[in-house]
Amino acid sequence: MEERVERAERIERSKIKQFLQKYHLDAGKIDFEENICRFMTEMTKGLEGKESSLAMLPTFLEVSDVLPADEPVLVLDAGGTNLRAAVVRFSGEKKPIIENYAQYPMPGTRGEIGKEEFFHGLAEALLPLLPLVPKGTPIGFCFSYPTEMAPDLDGRLLKLTKEIAVRDLEGARVGENLFKALRQKGYRGEKKIVVLNDTVATLLAGQAAATERFYDSFIGLILGTGTNTAYMEENHRIKKLSDLAPGRSMIINVEAGSYAQAPRGELDRELDRELSDPGFYVFEKMISGAYLGKLVWKALQRAGAEGIFSPGFTQTLSQGKDLKTSDVNDFLNYPPGAGNPLYRCITRENREGTENLRDSARVYRIMDGILERAALLTAINLSALIVKTGKGLNPCRPVCITAEGTTFYSLKGFKIKVEYYLKKHLVEERGIFYEIVRVDHATLTGAAVAALTKFHKREK
Figure 1 (cartoon, helix red, strand yellow):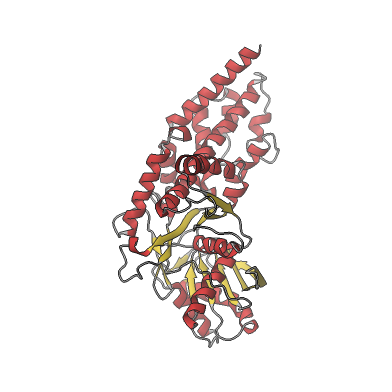
Figure 2: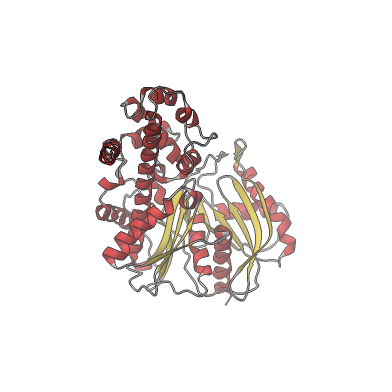
């Protein structure tokens, strides 16, 4: 009896594995070392100004040990849904103190607006905070969109993403336009604005939190609705820029979501074609929260069409519309949950009896396989950055990966899967050490670090 059960289970696993392999959704068929090399090649081309799917955007920001205590900074965090503002200062122990926090809807999320209205909406969020800080207090502006940075710490928007609708915004210098809007509202302080994105801010938050730990280098990872990474690069390798100080380094915003050399399959390409921005952010569409549910749904529909599920299950499945990544997470945590869109498929009347349980297990294995691939690709991204730096060879000085995002932390087993591949391919095979840390209010903290350390240096 036990042998028959084990044989049946082997057949089930083999059936799902063959399906995943057919559509290049199987992590086991992805060569880790080969794909690290591919990623690093794209990084190098981006740093040299050659054609690459990775923008490798210089930020002109460094990691600094200087973090003055009890000096206030204004922080504005413009994300995909919410606009947040606060006053941030650091204690003598370098602990962030966040005061007068406020959250607003992001301008441009409730219908299309013009560029001037957009920046006036951002300025409005800062106005209540201006009387609370000394005149001339720096502003850390976390602007979570692809932005080309300049040495003056301002940035020019390259592409508007995340369903924000603003006319004539692309190409605008975001710090300059924010300052202009503040002036029009009566602000008379000098311009002290540092523009950075959320991934760079997350990296800096990890550096600020490392008060009792020695790290060899720092990486920022965002993996929530979207994905991106940032890391420290030596100036002499950033060949697309001239006149950089030798022997120094700066943070590079990789724009990893745009990476185009990952091994995609038919369902990946089909999903990409159906979205509003085909050909853009194809890596992000393979691993991030905005798209994993859609990809899983495509896989389940295709599996049903190919006879993976029983006829009754397939018929009920065909009546559904879509899955969100949160639905996938709900199913993996509790398959029979009544609030899940797949509930009807699981609980339908079925004359085939135990076939219902087999269908549920098949759904689980397909979902888990797709998440396994996403975790592997995330580990490839992180590993490529770490290997390129040559850091982390001393176990007492690992590389610090500061990670943010619900996909990374909340999706069932995802973080564990990523760490499995990092441990295997970095620690065991290369002798490279890392630590993953989580920082509360990472983007606010990192934006404050950027503004405070940059202007503190200039005034010394």
